[in-house]
Length: 373
Image (tube, rainbow, N blue to C red; front, side, top):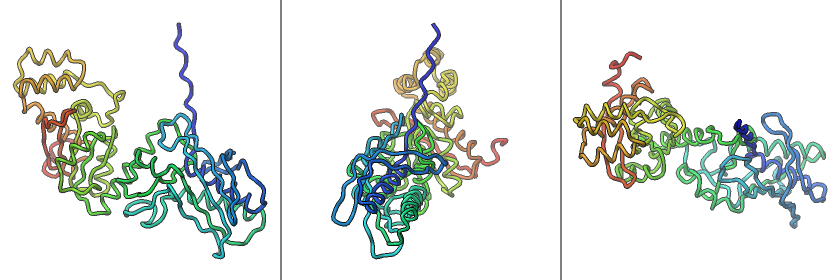
């Protein structure tokens, strides 16, 4: 039987799009005094989309409208969140925009929104303001208005994001550059890495620690207790991308902290370490073990291993510290090749339970001419 073709993943919409649509509905209702249960807006990509309103409530001098965010098939923390916009008349000319409950506020420099302002990014901010202005123009209104964007569950949702680390407190960010959410897109995660590096740089961090996940980050924080929280950046699978961003931002020293599985790939020169990106080369690990003094029987076991963690367990049983230090050194060398030197790279490998296996460091300037780039 022929395999069935995979079903296309469904796109969704950003919090910025939802906020703009809710604003249009609320403002239209405020002007017409009629309930608005849908709103059509133009996305930055040029597409017109109609959003259904979950609510449209009249208060004494304002209207609040809200829509449920549909992130499509993307595993988004804000999927199914209620995005609200409350619009009221203002004595101040023009349009005033701010964040309410569940929308974070920026407390650190290095982000695209100034310190002290609601975490509504530039493109969503523009979408909201333009949607409101279109309604005012349509009804030939010249009065000033005030817009408050809220997300009732935003503070709880934010705990599943990197906002706290970036200095965005009290809720989520209103995001989006295209208006749509592309399922399983890596762009959002890469953007968060860039933001984290910018925050670290602006706050004076010349040494950053990049980790593959939350667990390795906890180990890293114990390893480097003197570094501020801003210095720790979760790179996930994007090793090469993160290293290049660090160098581009002028970071002088980068410490990589992770575990056998992903760092066995980095040691081979694989800089995108997702489980599907490239297999672990057990021949490479066996050769490394042999150079570290492993017996032929042990190297044979390594060549037939199923996982890099299994290899790590075998070497731990032998007490072969040299193997792990060599593996870390290979990670440093490959990382320096990736960025073409110029920064210092340190690598530390831990077990799942937090036992330090190996560590190595190389100076990018010292080894700048060591390879033929």
